[in-house]
Length: 263
Image 1: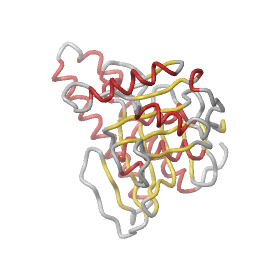
Image 2: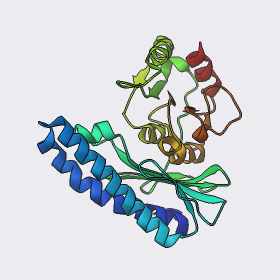
Image 3: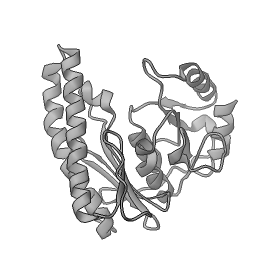
């Protein structure tokens, strides 16, 4: 593979360890579909088991680093500059329904900025990885954001609030504005995967609200190292992985997409 530092190698190894759990359990979910609660409980256990496997591998290699975890409690490390941000199963609904677009997302935050990221899709065997200053890759292929500068030709990714989550009316208003001026919208069901699709130029931009650090931290590194731009939707100077909203795109479209989303 291209540049893989010792840090990235540790993160990739951890992702592969978590993937063993998810890959095994993914093929068991279909048999549980007749019992909705049983299937959901099964997926929750798979999620937790994958996270434990990931943390175990990372802790052994970097014992002083802290952790921000989706499933477990945050872990404070002796090293105040570095912490891993982990989503062991981004795209849980896809996983539950037998759709292979789900992934493990691991980011290394250094001095409160996303520094390195690994996103691994266990079923499709897509390994995305990036480190500050060294570019972004899918397996052995260098990633670049798209070069489109015309909104009317652009394909935009997003996520939508599902049952019980706030923000549906605003999300639909934003979608209506985007659909009126672009080539269309796609929703893959995983924020981490959406950001990877933006990094490789399949999506020209991506926006979403109501997110958490583990949803986007690794993907932010991916887009930036592929030559793209990432910010909040509101144009604030806050770090996008520490706020609930995100906008990622190439540099040509960023301001235009933001203006369009905000109306």
